Image (cartoon, rainbow, N blue to C red; front, side, top):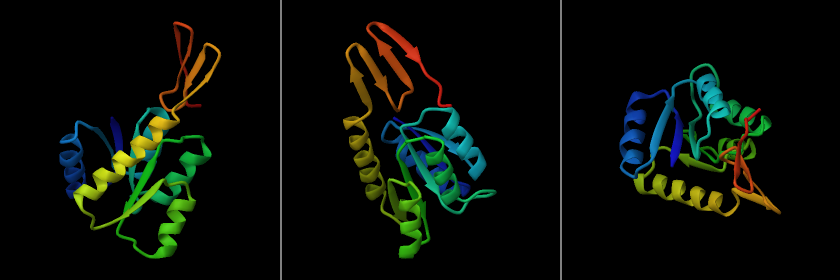
Length: 151
């Protein structure tokens, strides 16, 4: 599994690297909102862990922009903002899950696993000999693989 972590705090980045790598998860880091948005648009990830308070663009805006551009990668928003209105704004803006800091390591990992299970149920569509992998941006007709772009 490959996860994009959009986070600017060095301590949090070290935490994510240690915890996720210990689960055989490849971790890629983006440190600003625009960088996270660009990486998520250009590269396939299995999930995105998105902080809300980021330099140059909030996580709310990044999430909303990704959904508007058709990126359906599962997103876990992570933040210290615990108010109900903030959680609703995140979920209604396109996040699949919302986790408030501080949180237990086991809870983060359980949420990552839960999102991965949901994805495994509906990642591909099949019509006759054509199969579309919606998350991997690939199609296959018979034995021939077709690479697709995200734009």
